[in-house]
Length: 215
Image 1 (cartoon, rainbow, N blue to C red):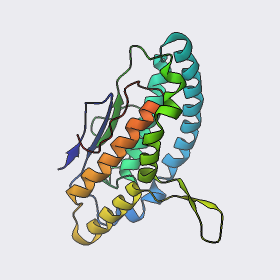
Image 2: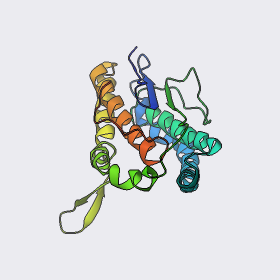
Image 3: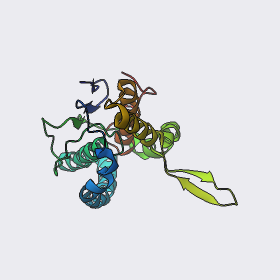
Image 4: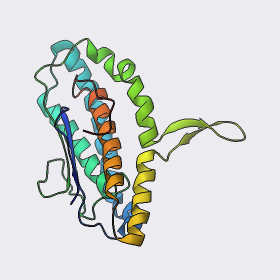
């Protein structure tokens, strides 16, 4: 069983490759995950509101209120489990639980260390100015970049490298019954990078994300 995780950065992203995912289940996961997508839509609305509240709390006190911190980490955790199950990795057939808490026997998890103190100055610039180099790189991983469409006009390019690699691995799995370990490492590396940048940009940590896929 392949396993990926890291503890060097305040955000820890865990993913275990169950042995093996079913050959054809990935074709239906867009449908099976719909209940999660609906709930996550509302959770992310709350996430952004809480992030704004946390911004001002950090600016004036240097602290991220613990209850708000735990909620936002829980939203990231729920999101990661759904992505790991669906088209962010397609690495398990175990259905994600409907909870923001950690579930020890689930093959994907996310943890963020609670910071004792956060910089009042960095909160003004890190989420937009300092994170720009990472935003450019991560946009290739997750998609959503703007590109010029033939015939004129700008169009959002949705298919990021994470999705493409996961689909390629799933097609390989369909015909061989095996998820390529190297592709699993690659998809985990891109997800880890994206979530680290998310933790930094959403004010959960002051530690600047490293420019690397592997740990």
